[in-house]
Picture 1 (cartoon, one colour):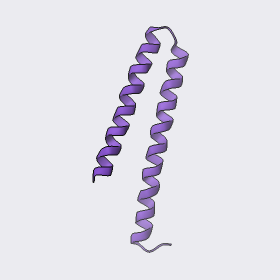
Picture 2: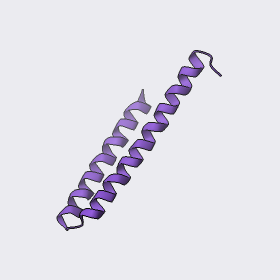
Picture 3: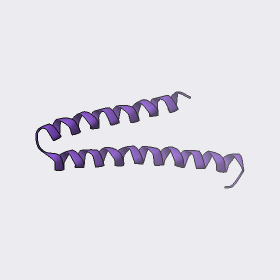
Length: 67
């Protein structure tokens, strides 16, 4: 259970940091860099989610004995 809560906090933390960096970059007039930061944050979170989904499918395989 703690793994799920930690992962949620990590995703929320990454989202908050990316949002702050994006806001600062937009105010500085660097919209292209702000878009890159947003894209990189999205890819990092997507990779984390893919890892969790892979773990879920592995557990489902183990439960139903699909080796």
